[in-house]
Image 1 (cartoon, rainbow, N blue to C red):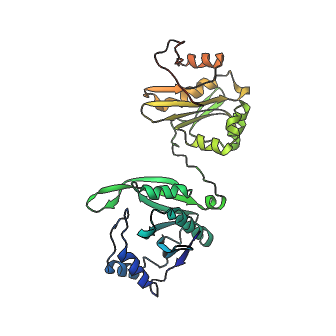
Image 2 (cartoon, rainbow, N blue to C red):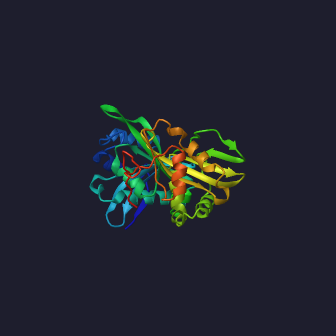
Image 3 (cartoon, rainbow, N blue to C red):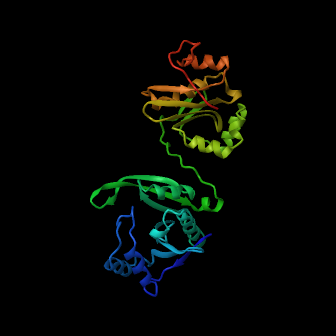
Length: 326
């Protein structure tokens, strides 16, 4: 099954269809949620909303169900094209949203020069947000109290986007949300420490392979996604070479979890591990709990003990217990 876009000529034979569609449908989660009046449709036809140099509109025609909805494209001459999707009420809730969004992206990137496509919705429109996620789009922005709601306070709005290269390759480029620097780049004994500077995927694979963490390097794309999703990433560099890395995961309030601490074997026993640990935890000095798991290696246990960590086990006399499912 597939959906095709049929261009609308609002000044010609499609005018009647626009009146029929917009005056007979309601549009939950849109700024104007009720059916449009004849005057609203007429005004938008005359103003160029449906079609002018910057706007185009299309019917969404399904090869099985027929005409299922409408889409409006805005800023069609720009590198970023915005779209609005409206499914007819009789076709909502049947899984057609993802198919419609895919058809819209296909039209944009195969017939226009756009580099990215963007759509926005209310924060509580979970159905549309699920459509974006299933279609491979990425949430890029969250705007607070910007979506007007008649008779109620404004809602938050969220923006999702798809890049041309993602559409071409069917591979999502992950966004690095936690990209602010937590400390100035520092030099210590010829080793440079950087905050939230993401190493290239190849450099990550080389470092993780060097310490024998093949479970990570078996899927380099997944490793790269994991690094980008971390709350804080600290890297250690010897010139242009990545020689160490530590990353933390956190709720930025009560708990921080140290996920990886690794140093290239040729650079071990030079204090780099301690330097990484000190710096990766700097943004979380007021966290109630700092947690990590490590291998059952006496040397590692002694290293973390030297940094103030205590083993959470009955044998070690700890008042708390650590559990893990691998």
